[in-house]
Length: 182
Image (cartoon, rainbow, N blue to C red; front, side, top):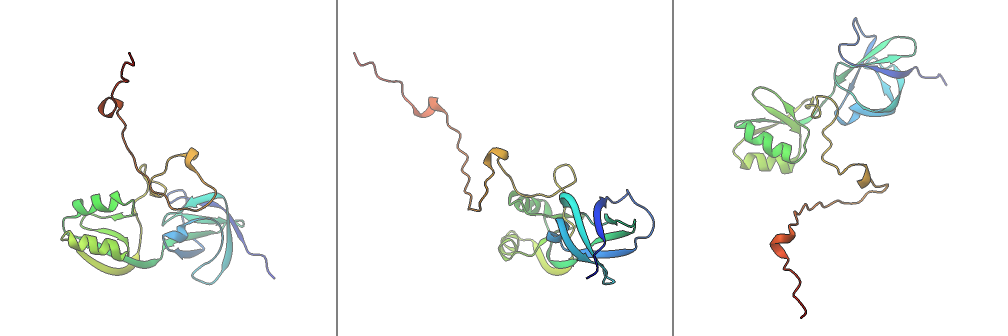
């Protein structure tokens, strides 16, 4: 068995120049990884072994141990192209913490029949397509929009559904002072 070349370093778009030795196409979920065997479009296998789980963007490149670069491209996947009053659509999509590709005249989200029905009901034009999905990064332009969390104190080592109810409690509105026992 031949040992696979390893990529322990990721170079962000703009940090590398020249022609890459190969290209790998990854879907949105596949572009969030730490350690995985991948294969270039030419069929050459290699092992990604990054120090931590990383959100990878199109145009980034894995640097193999021998110095060769493998460029990352977004793979085609099932998406919804949304046109019409997209500002309203953007609010509804964002309110659901759904990754969204934002363009001048349309929004693109991964295909979801529930969101598709809701958006059509709001009067938007929704067209199923198969194309690369490149959603907007997090609040500071990098990373993923993973929904909200409640910080490290709320982490769990097991899976279970979460229902979050946020209630503002104002004692002055619903409590009466203790009656004087005298």
